[in-house]
Structures are given as C-alpha cells and as structure tokens.
Amino acid sequence: EKETISGKNPTMAGLVLILQTFLIQLHLANQELMKEHNGKNLPAEVAMQTFYKVANKYIRPFEQRYKGELIFPIRKDENSIFLSLAAYREHLLADTLQYAFKNAKNPDKLYVGAVVQNCFGKVDSEDYSSFDATGKPCRTGLQVTGKDKAGRDMTKMSDAPPDINGIDVFCNNPDFKKYCDNGQIRVLYVHSSGSLGPAMARYHASKLWGGETYFMQCDSHLQFAEHWDAKYIDEIQATSNYPKSILSSYPPGFQEGHGDGTVEESPGARLCRCETIESSPNPIVRLNVGRNYNGDEERPTQIPFIAAGFFFARAEFLRDVPFDPYLPWCFMGEE
Image 1 (cartoon, rainbow, N blue to C red):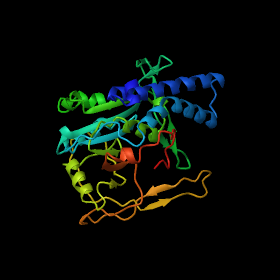
Image 2 (spheres, helix red, strand yellow):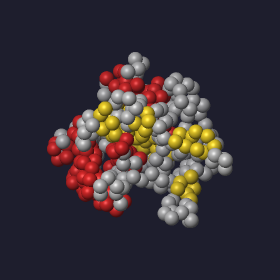
Image 3 (spheres, one colour):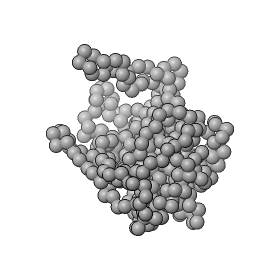
Image 4 (tube, rainbow, N blue to C red):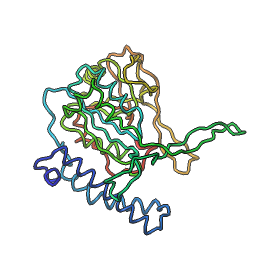
C-alpha cells in the first residue's frame, strides 16, 4: 500500500488495499455516527461531511501523488482493452462477461475491472470481515405484486438469499476459466449496504486499470456483437480527432440468458440533447439521445455529451480527465 501511494512501485494489490481501507474506514465512521444518533437516519449534511473527512485522509494523498500522470505505463503496441464494470446486485453480470469474451476478436487482450456490490449475507462484524450467508439474510428490491383499484403498481420487499456472484459463475465456467486464471479479471467487492452509488463505483473501477491501451466503461447488463473489440478500435481510429476522441452512446439492454446468443447490430444514437424538469425541487440536467446514425457514415460525428452507460477511449483520458472521487450517492445527473 505504501509503495503504491508513494509511486515507487505501484501494484494492483496495493490499489485494491487502498480502496478497501477507505471503504472500511468510512463504514466504521458511519457506524459511530449511527450510535451517536441512536440508530436514526443521519442528516445528509452529516453523512457528506464524514465522507469528505475519510476520503481526504485515505483517498486524497493517493490522488495527489498521481495527479497528471498514469499509475501504470500503457503497454505499447498491444491494442488491449480494459472493460470497467460497476455492478450493483447484478444478476446479469456473468452473462455480460460471457458475451464480452466469447464475441471478442482478441479475448486474450481483454481485461476487466469489476466493482461487485452484492448482498453477501448478514454482516457479522463491524469491519465487513465476515458474513452469515445462511437462510435468507438479504432483502429484495421492490417487487410488483399486482395493481390497486387506481391501476397503480402494488409492491413489497421480501427476504432473500445472498446475491449470485457473477464473477464466480463466470470463472467457474470451463469455457472462460482461463481468463480468470490469466489475471484478466480484477475485482473489488463491496457489500451492498456500503455502496456509494454508481459514480463512486465507476471511480473505484477505474483504479483497476493496469496499463491497457484502451479504456471502456459500460453497463453490467449488456450483450456484445461479434468482434466488438476490433470494431471499436477501428471506429475510434477513424475519428477526426483521434487519439483525443471518445465513442459514446446509450446502449440497449437485454433479456436474461446465458451469454451465448447472437447480437443484431444497429446504428447508434447521437447524444445531442439534454433536459431538466424545472418544477423539480432539485432540477438536474439529464442527457438524452438525438438522431440515430444511418450506418453508412464515413466516420463518427462529434457529439457534446458522454454517457456513463457506454464510452470507449484511449486510456490516456484517465490522466487528462480522471474520475472525480468526491461524488458519493449520486445517480441521476452524474454524467
């Protein structure tokens, strides 16, 4: 950890330890706050002040050391891809990984950094070091049980077993186990109750990058077309401002399966619109798509916005416009 923070000999293990230490210390600080407030909900201002205090102690020194530089040198002439995935209780994570590797033209050059935010069981210790996974120690999200007289959805929450670990499912599949054994899957595990939202999860995932040529961030519930990796590399190199260009759009979702289907390709949509609801107590700018590509364009055209659900860029962007480590509990409008 010390060698990674100092920059003398950064390692992936050191990076993960820094992130885990921060998450554990923040959890412990919040536990103390809950005791002070007799288990009642914390005021937002108090929770934010605590987050900033812990982040300044455990994250800021690391960020300051690598400001304006990459943690690892980019491996030359490799055309490798780092795939960043932030997965919150995601039951389609294994499918997504299977699609990505099976349909890649060069799967041996694909590396994944996943932040897996699951309910692993009932927490048995204050520092998240042990869990009781017996029975149904977790809770589901809202489940639609029917309609009321007004036609509105009726919902409930139920007890549930621990979430399926998509990484384990993927790595125990004989067809994909070799990629895990080769060190191509890097993971940071976070208990769901300690999740800090998608913006922070994506920040954490970005720190699992290890010198790959390209950086790709996408949702953890996606299908991948045949030879998607080579197609994205060709497409980004066709942009007029390469290597400073970024490919981005809102991707479509997919139905549950086993990562072995055929993907029908279609032209993407330009991110050319933004909007807000003025009547909202806290108006937030939301991005939206504009006109679709025809599919016969000579090269991608310029767009003003970037989507968190998918973008593809040269890894130097991590140095030029790194992720903000101070955006906890932010979902709508984080882009």
